[in-house]
Length: 502
Image 1 (cartoon, rainbow, N blue to C red):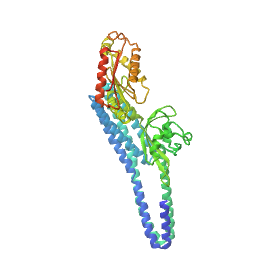
Image 2: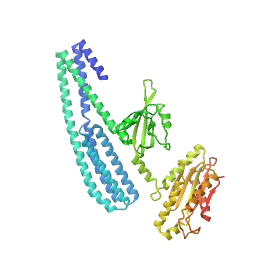
Image 3: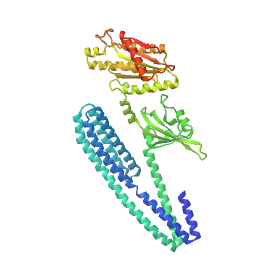
Image 4: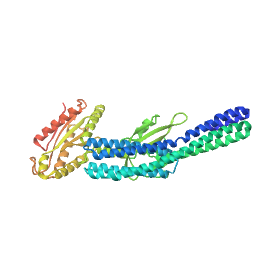
């Protein structure tokens, strides 16, 4: 629209005077030449991004060697963090290339597929390292890994060569266009009519190319961005092909359906009304959601809901831009989970306890911390062996997990045979009943323990303390109180002791 107004202004000046036409045409043509030069510079972004990929690939491979040579968990974690950072840099460079590359998309996809194949090799090396198979990990890194990095560098160089050649062609075209514009200015002074026709044709061509560029960009967005548009009632107005593939649905079936920002599970941590409360006031809502696809796959997404405004600045709809974070969530889950029992570990226990105490203080609820110890577990390991002990821990942990029915109930393996429960809003009687039920279930597993002083079956002792809203304890105080209750329970074994808050 802006360019059309400029064209109309040029024709008005042509009618008034030939001199004014020449001056206006000079400014207009130089502007077009400048825009053309700016447009044709962007292949250098592809070239630079491709070179960055090569540099980061070399760095990733070097730190993969550090992964293999790591002597402890700290060194391994540090090396993995370096690898992840360089891998993130490579991904960002690929995003630039996908958006700006002017060649065949299959060329980019071939390089990107090779990059994804390298990630498989990386994951294999890290897995072998964590399993203690250092020689296998080193062999893969030195051979298959090194060869694949070399292949990636070679493939990326093709993109660099193509982008450089394209940049040279565009630059030469821009220079030629500018020289032509100067020649046209002279011609405009000779004949106003011919000059005006030429400008009109040239401007229309530029507008047509701009429209094609917009369509191309819209296609790239449709194919590479997870996004959808909703009306104010949560009905889908439009959805990208990329998001359709991600969800496993077709556009025809989704458009017109009320999907409420793809929240389709009552147990989701966020509900549609929570989003609308923020977005309907004209502010962007952002958060992480766990969703279920039509094929019953669980996926984690980062969702940003942007309000769209009409001419009167009233919210008339929402744009929903999504990022798939399922892999990151899976990694986070591994970092807070005990590998044997699949329960949360001690690190997550400290975080959750602090969080629940803060929530309890704000909502004026109680928080109960229960400490659980398997009776005479060392004797069990000495008698039946550590593999049998591990199996017993797994069975006990399964009972603990099944006992939790509320979203804010948690169970942790704190170390060895020691476990912890955190739950809220139970009084003393409810707490005793709940913990006794767990104790009886463990006893009913009938795990033979001939060396136990508490009977011939495996049993547990439980000590708990309730932090009430009128006498709120910090995490250390609550832990000490619960541990003291556990000590009292272990004096007799197979007991539940819940200390009363004063």
